[in-house]
Amino acid sequence: MLWRLGCLLVTVALAVGCQPAKEKTGGSEDSPPAVTAPEFSHVITIGSAYYTGGPQQGRPPDGTLFKGTRVRVLENAGSYSVVRTADGIEAYVSTAAIGPAEGVKGEKK
Image (tube, rainbow, N blue to C red; front, top):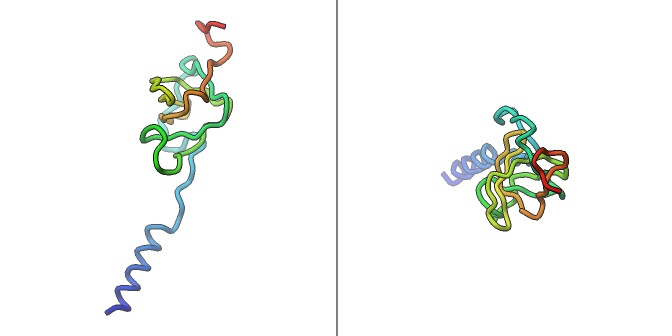
């Protein structure tokens, strides 16, 4: 009986945890269609981890937005802001990592 229980636990562990989750670094096949460029008035100025479930979680980040990634700021929440990328990723990013994009109409210099 103990042998069968052990085999069952090993089988379940292998089935559930075989492959680690892949870190997102952009869009995926499941992402919504890209939004037009004029909406992206900001850019990531330094590589920054992002979190889809809320500001900095007690777990690893969901991915990384790289320097130069154009984003649309949806909400400024203090030290974190909610942004959307052209790939459709909507996530919390450090506000310090966001800056205005050059050449965007209406931007003050």
